[in-house]
Image (tube, rainbow, N blue to C red):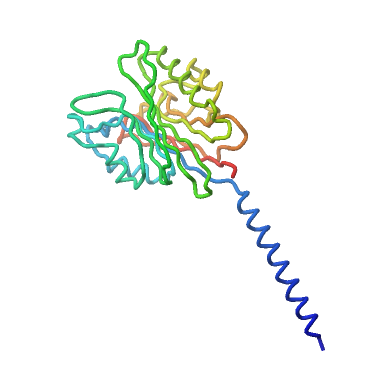
Amino acid sequence: MISSRKIQWFAQTTLFVMALLAMFQSSAFSAEPMELRILTYNVHHGQGNDGKFDLERLAKIILKTKPDLVALQELDQKTGRSHGVDQPAEFAKLLGMEYVFAENLVFDGGLYGVAAYSRFPVVAQKTYKLPQLDGPEPRGIAEITVELPNKQKVRFLSTHWCHQSAGDRLKSAKFTNNLLKNSSDEFVIVTGDFNAQPKSDPIAELKKKWRPTYTTELLTAPSDNPRVSIDHVFANQGDTWKVKHIEVIQEKVASDHCPLLVVLEIAN
């Protein structure tokens, strides 16, 4: 017959082993990388190649990729050509995301610029004006800081560089590099329409501080017959992240650019 003392010892030992297993499983789970789905899309002020203004069509394309973070460029806010629609706010409703809008210029009775969106809580936001040398249009950056489910904070930037001035693009690259000052312990992503191909001088400048997610040219524009690789996703340098998947979404009508999806794994 087993004594009560032995039964008690066995029960205590069993509970101790179960607690150790629970701690091990919790530690193993927390060490798993976080997957982050990022989409960048120049939406051409909502107007497709068929001449139709259709934000719902664009939103459906975006949502189909199940993104966590979305960068949109060429957004109109209450302009005449876009029928007075507040496009940044409307996309926020359609996507079910928080956002910040950075105006680049006053245009046609409203504003025009870029926006950054997140399905995670936004804990901080900023906008920046990019330096202008000889390009005819001022450009900017929309930045949000989001908190992931594991409590990690990520800075996410959406931008659109000048397509008419190489000098402006180079200045934009240097300005963007400076945003990484005092950010050695932060995870930062910059994405958008850079109007610069991978082998260009502005991208070479950007790569001094940032690491590209691409390993080969990804043709994104024009959408009906893509010939140039100008939409990109970069993250700050380091070994805390890797690319799990990257894909140009082949969509020929909704905008004059194709959206670019990048799925990252980031260490906890």
